[in-house]
Image (cartoon, rainbow, N blue to C red):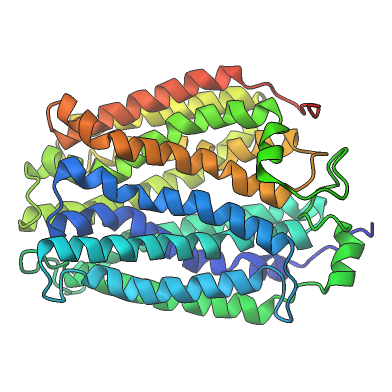
Length: 447
């Protein structure tokens, strides 16, 4: 195979720039879904059920997009058609979802409308997100991949900060942060509108600036495996990438990291589901979504999410200084778990900054470390696009399980949403313990 050429900084930037817009959409969804459904009238004990759809769509969509785009060739490229279609659908749904309470429907009908819109939104975000990871694998040489993914990480975190802050900023400039009962405030609605506009502009920029290699040129740089950035799987030449076969032959590291992922992402699901109510209950002493105090707490939670993202960026710069990757991973998760445990213990809104900075440390490790272990272990296996899509299941499946169990756990601990932060914290501490099971280094293919 030919050596992939070095790309300029701006070429690397263009490959991932659309990720900025996609991440704004994802941040708006993560920070505001519970707020929207609570405003529409959802009961806290059923709130976690609304969070089943996002990971369910992820576990279905990302492996499909990864596998199909491995085999797709069009005049517009290989990955870009999936990116553009996913972004277009996301933009349409972002304009509908926050208006679920504005169409004069009953509470039940509004919740169902919101649920369908959420399903479509997460499907489209996942469809738009996966191609960016694959584009780097397709077009960037091994020497520049670290730089390419660092650019992608910067754009990811920058988009998150912008999306998290939108409701707070729009309230500050005069948009209403309160609305009639069952209606989402203008500050949230316009956050989704502006986020949708930025998303489509970013994706248009990427599609205009990036030209994927045609089939013959792609094969010259990547081989004929149809697999982004990896060699043929040993003993699998000419065979189709059957998902069950791939999972059966996956290295043990794939599954051990998956165990860590299970407890990490279960904890994060409980944060996303209950943290607005937890902050409102702890600092503003209310969980009533019809009050001004609750909506103010929801805006401040967006600011705390942004602080978490900034803390994640800062901690990510320190992670490479750890000589032992397992120690870095485990220590980060312990720090993140401590952050969750502190949320119900900080009665002042400024004090809440401390636990969210700590959670940012855990989040940084969750984003970087799993793929470090897994991609190293997968060297020589082939079908990297399909494997990474399947590995997304270790992100999605624990969230589905946690969402199903959330209402029952909330009842068991006394129906205080703030107490769910203790559950999240313990989950992170268990994840840190599971890190000790991971073997470092490459793992040989199992027969």
